[in-house]
Length: 155
Image (cartoon, rainbow, N blue to C red; front, side):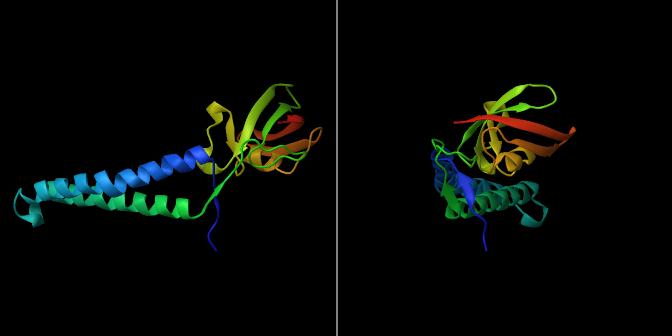
């Protein structure tokens, strides 16, 4: 069974655009690069040709991965209102030991960007938060050890 890939509508569109580029212009550019390298002579000793073929294989792997992600994509709504935390919710929570408050939106791993306030539902903190409610205290194993967080609000 293939696993669903959680994406925002914006991320799905970006992946579709990348896939379309690779399948059209990317493949055309790669064919031209291989043809040029082929013109350099004996293929058994042609480093440019080998490099171009390696680049082509890498591009085809990326195309396959993008097609797989898009095939298994599930669009998440980032405007979800709920009493329990789920993918799409924005959560304000505090580190119990320091009192430091944090605000993150729970997203799928594809959209994760902690520096932009988005954490994956598969990350240690994301896993701990999902399913919890306002006022709950959750524990997460972080690189700095176990941390406890109190949920202040769910948006």
